[in-house]
Image (cartoon, rainbow, N blue to C red; front, top):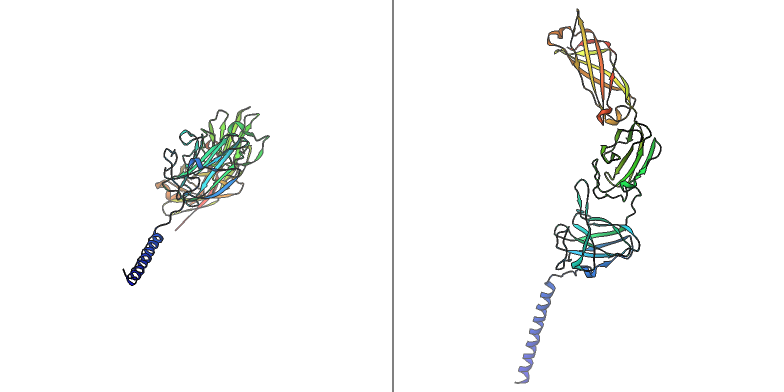
Length: 403
């Protein structure tokens, strides 16, 4: 082969090599890039938590599950692992937060030394109302025991989330058995449900989500007591654990002990309440001296009501209206008026009421002139057995026909 042909072939070979290399680079650059799996993707590589509190941001988008990995409480698609061995007995709280739905990460806690020999400690949090919080766990940890915390997908995908672990300092009266006495009555109590938990089997019939604290009151004599404010987050029980009511007043016996459950409602934090003698409802009702009657014989009667006492939630007004025609009384009627919110009813201020009174069809022509009106009222309470009845004096009223 001549040197010229050899040179031309070398040039062509070089050109082909350049084209092949360029195409190879093109295909390599076009291939999708894959992020590396998290370093703690496997149980054996669990990230050690050396101190509390601990917080980190986790990208679990490339996480997976190992063959034989327990998938209880999760979707079973992806997981990352952590391990923690406390140096003293403590309560631990772990929480995952994706800042979007708050329910895409499921946490579970185990003890054991290998993936195929794990013992489940806890899995998510179940509230007494039936709500499940997969991203939140709390558990009692024993010094020297290694606990494995698995953060996995809850609904088929694991993305970016924050993972926080802290020692949980529970309130001293977190459990019913450790109910704190409120002391002498009347008592003002400052409760705090921060870090409060739910005991196994504990119910929250008056509302609540994640925790409660307990108080007790013992009465020397039979009496009526009240817990104020009456709240959806407060429940009163007798010593046998039977529910008396959700806050509000309750009746006691001499020497009786009663339990007050204060619940994290709507969110954990401070909650102030007082326990004192129940103030019975007392008051008066009166009727105005003038009234109006329309063409149909309907009479509008008005007046005022004033009362003091605890836990009134409404009032019903009844008016008896009479007019004497010879010796025959005619007409009586009933009215209802309750335009006030529960906390404003028996506050010692006058409340205006209006009642509508209907007479018999044969007597509507006689409704003008002087009549006798007798008002009464029922003050409604919660619980109902504390309701009170007010009776007003009969008064002369004059009816003016509305044309």
